[in-house]
Image (cartoon, rainbow, N blue to C red; front, top):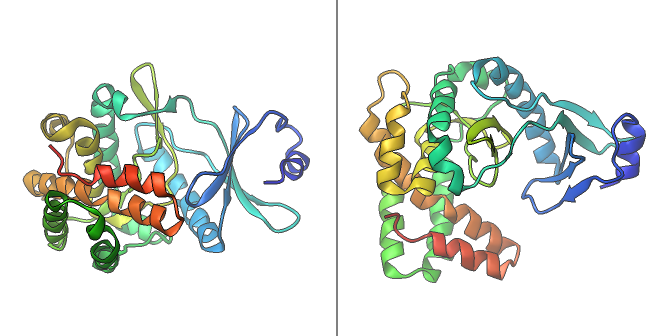
Length: 275
């Protein structure tokens, strides 16, 4: 990333001590301590960024915690990027989950109550079952041979559960892990990186509780979540459990695609039955 070009474009922002994070799947991130710059790695991601900006404008007034107030720019060479003031708080980990579970439940209650049509008109996608079937085929061919039998059976059951139609569709963040929740003083302060957001199964977001709190902890925490109108909470719970079992497949495939041997090994370890 050309920090000199960014400094020239935004002379009031100091880029001299900026940290460049280039480990993300879709973006290179520049963090000045006060400002965040996100640079798409590929043109399709740049298109997603434009939709994300429109979505954030919709969500900002409707959610109980902060989201980025993002503007879009381009360098002289045409490189697109997003710029927003850094939100308060530090990246949350599962160690913070018990403290912020109620806040996350409130966030998801508000997010999942938004009318999907309001987001679809902005360009948000609704991937449906096709993406699930593509994932299942790749998992069968590339991931299953690397797993012990108990993990294979759990994965098979999870995919079978998710092939059933969801009881409702909602606007979902779809990437609450990987440090996208921000926390300060034991409270949730913000949510970043909405590039994967789409209209789909609200249980996808609820899987965060399963992954970070385990089965019993997640059940207790989800008591504070109000599902979309007319949705059976038990059905959502079963689907959240299934999503939690399937989600590490994405990371394993990413690691295989990029030759990241040690990363693949760590992600395979997550593909064991959730207890």
